[in-house]
Length: 160
Image (cartoon, rainbow, N blue to C red):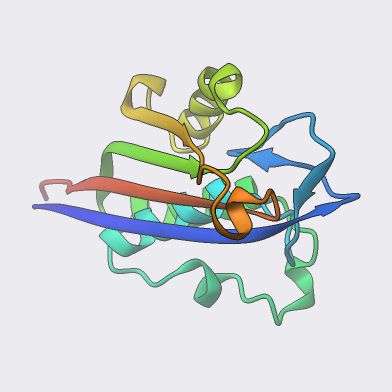
């Protein structure tokens, strides 16, 4: 059995925060605002794999109302979600990610982000695609006030 999952997340950008994508810190004057470390890509990947396996979503597993997740490492949360997916008999076929922000440019960090996600998800980096897009100055993302990520994940159920 094969299933697809869709993940999405958006965060405001704020000075004084680290800019993280898939566990990779990128030098920038602003970072994602959030209850956890705000890694918008890790959150979207988490929702994509949970959605494909029908195991809930990131807010259900790691609610922002729980103080234990304050400033949590999003890649550790992704790892926990992946362990649930794996325990349920699912294998990742591929992950396709789109990151939308005006700055910083993602291209120079693409391979290291792919590697970081692949290691966490126990797959090879050739199964992870990362694309950076802009909003051409339109809306809050285009004005540099926010960042969003869209992720599609394909899973296959292991034969029993």
